[in-house]
Length: 254
Image 1 (tube, rainbow, N blue to C red):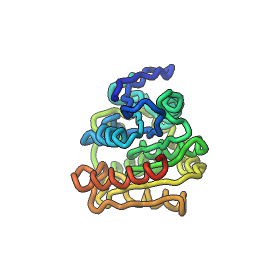
Image 2: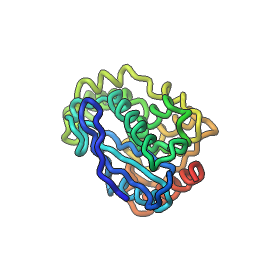
Image 3: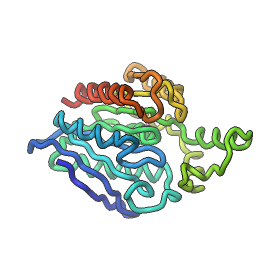
Image 4: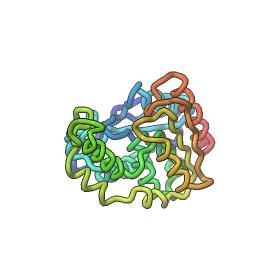
């Protein structure tokens, strides 16, 4: 079953999609967090496809647009990392309290900045999780801002630092990430982790995932997808991504 859902955050309505297997029992579940300037579908409908794949294996899932993204309320300009962490925590509470979901068997999954969010939230709520899956995860977002500032200053790229693929980034986002230590909070997560990253990723370098590996140690597994771009937009790449992710999730939940 696929169902359009809404969640009132008090600051606006989140709009999302709930995927439930057809059987009537409680199911383990996965919460998917989209990336920076992304939405609950993500490129190539990868979140839709993976949620449907999970349902075929009797695993529930949910995916929302964060405020200011996709079909949810709000403006992208007002988006901050900390605000999205708050929304992610509300989504977690909503999902685990559903009658059809086994609250003892939940995994967080995030793509790009959604991976950084998933790790951050996992550090806050480690005991409530059975696993963590990071797809090409972003790291310290303040470093992304600093790198972009230097590239513009040195003439390596042109344009406005506040122009993100035609969306206007707000000053609040920059101020927020400059005050955060994302890895420090993520280090509070004590469970197992799967990290998948493309070696051809020019948006977030593989070096970031290697940093996560140092953070998590032997509890983490890093799978490199040869030549894959940031969002795995090639049939062999997406198939490998889905295969290794589903295998990890089934080991932890079923």
